[in-house]
Image 1 (cartoon, rainbow, N blue to C red):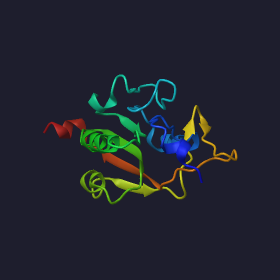
Image 2: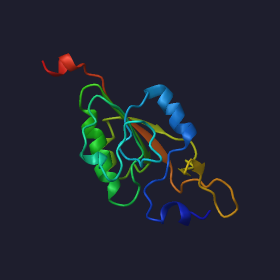
Image 3: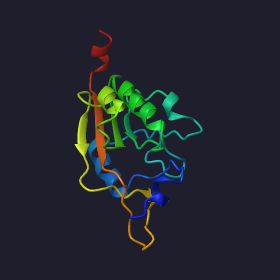
Length: 161
């Protein structure tokens, strides 16, 4: 399998497969996509690299996160997901590489969130279409993925007590 096209381009705008997002959206009814482009945003309220979702407040939102996968960026996004999820009425769902040997997994996911491992490998999209290999077949990611779900359903009135 040639994974060069998928993960060595330096691109960080690989899109979540539409079918996966739609299934999750039926369950969570997302209101915010903090790491998107104007073209691939999954919700009407969204942030791009230009207006930096890492610096914005996600409180009281139902947030879908497919963060940049390039080196160094995952740690900051996972930490932000965890921290924002501590706010009342905030749910954060992230599509992440299933890398259970990392400090970010131990510090911000394990014991702090629900983890759903995805069966098989995700076929990411570009411009709404699956990324294809040299033979024209959908190309799977070279790593397993997981969904991480942080929830805080604490009522606002309880939060201020």
